[in-house]
Image (cartoon, rainbow, N blue to C red; front, top):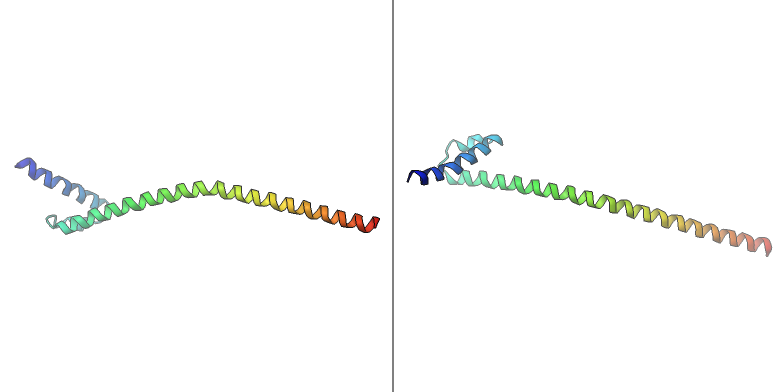
Length: 100
């Protein structure tokens, strides 16, 4: 009986300790209300989900930056190729005008 009661109290104390760390210690003044503990647990889960999403966003940005740089380099190479083609066309037109 005593160990069962201890098992019921222990998660409550852990949640209250986490709540105090988050500045929500006033939620632990009435620890017998399950709604407040559920709210605190949902808040902790939401914070964990937010942290996971932030890590995934950072990893996605780190993955996309080299791809964007590669795309920019490809675009610059295409512009250089277009410039060379335009110079070739201008040279051919000038040669045609000169040698008629």
